[in-house]
Image 1 (cartoon, rainbow, N blue to C red):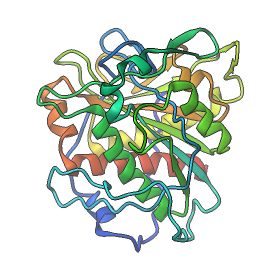
Image 2 (cartoon, rainbow, N blue to C red):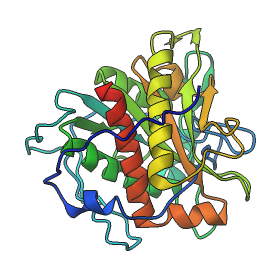
Image 3 (cartoon, rainbow, N blue to C red):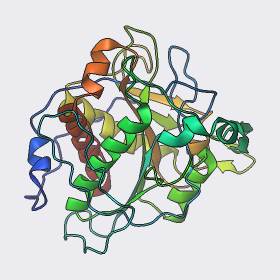
Length: 315
């Protein structure tokens, strides 16, 4: 299915921070599956393999409004954002909607390899709890990237009135595992779940792609009710992500459509609500890595994701 190329959703004036306006002036990116570590949920490198779909072992809590300032520096933003907030959300087009953001991996996974290598049930088989994720050649970890983009995305969605939950916020030693990540979205009765990742593929492999759930039924997995809605969500995100970041669809996954359907990811197999994975770029390619390590580009990535989610929820 071609990715959505409809006009970006109309945005209200956002009273939050200049970070939202700064999102309109930045760089660009590309992406594909997650790499690094044993098989777990995520997209693949040249041969797609799971690399990131963890599941939070902590119950989801409303996330507080991070204030990622995209001043052009390459420092992480949203690091001061906690997992809960007492502040009321502004009224907006997403008021009454719940979005779960699933930051791929956990920075602490590398110190808990025994735990994350333990296998969990994904409905159609068993797979490792999680992986460490990949990194750039200079050591910028995928887990840092996914948290930063997730914080920025949360701020943008909360400005539109959405209740946003994270599956984790680096507030636990490791994980969550892939089955728990799915469970968090299910228990939140989320209107949309987006798992944020970056790939660890070969040099020269560039471009983003969005992973959609295949029709799966077995064990505790049954995606029959979410295949169509997830495909719609994914197409909307792909179209807006391409437009906002300037990135092209992956040149090695998805046949240049920016979309890839998978049946081997527990985070998708076990979901009962619309859910997709987004591979924002290939951390092992120097050109993609230059984008992924840019704070201004990460703000653009978050904006593209937010516009896609908003377009899907507004219908």
